[in-house]
Length: 426
Image (cartoon, rainbow, N blue to C red; front, side):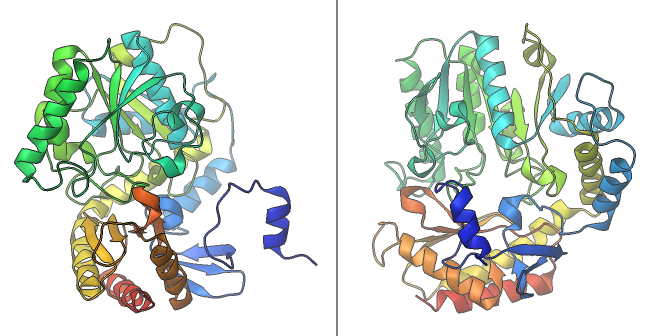
């Protein structure tokens, strides 16, 4: 009988990537651990790409899903939906956006797609500002604003996209500056760019670039951008697909590290809110959200089952202060990882905040990306019983560490030790 890997290759597109030379089938999980089809247990430090945000098989969420599925699974947005309204009320209140409206989707890609539709319709412009090294999804429109070559299969787009400096602190022409001077230079670049454009619809930015390798600007950069944007009437879209719900520890939303000039006009979210269920969404001021003047519904966005999961998961993370746990345990984890990397010549930088940590690997003594080293450590970590991710611009050479937010101190210590052993493979 053919292996599952052989069967996968026979029917799934070549461009659907799999981790590891010998890919694993994950069959079940509990807490911060998962098991493969061979019965081997792994400490999960990637959570299905930051999506199993709280814990595997969290009883509160699985019960909510089962209870709702026993009543009704689907109805669409053409009918009143109590779980959807209740979750929208909670998210609107948490968003920081005044007079907020919430539209649910099934993914972060679709959420960003909707944000682009809103911004371009509201501003009557197809010009978008995006950040270099960014990632916003895999649809036609979101690929067109993604500033990361590894995730951009076509240059065709319905949008005119212009890229701004600032998403990556330690690379590029301003890397040598102080934080204050870096911000000033990026603002000057934005001002200069706007001098060459027509009416721009929006700037879209991840407060911490996820697929880009957990890079971020100095705190306050997007507030400084916002002051410039406001003078031109340009909207600010904060892509919180990976930073939302307290993962950075310091803040509930990534934009709050840049909130000195107020909240974003539009906020997108997905991944962790459903703790593995397919939930995404957009929050915007009513005047922006209601700008759509044609019929629009969602068949699967706001499904009663996914909304029940989101409500249960959001309640759990707030009641158990998982943001605070991300700050405390994440602070310990990053220090342990920095210590583990201290004697490894291939490690260019350890960066991040909360439970969102990146380890950039380069050819020793240079800034040249080292994807082979990243692949080697990924494999060695798996052999040691630890699952991590990878990403980054400049040829995907950053290891990504993003455990569920309920990670314990003991698990952080264990994971750091396993990662240190994997780094020895270099």
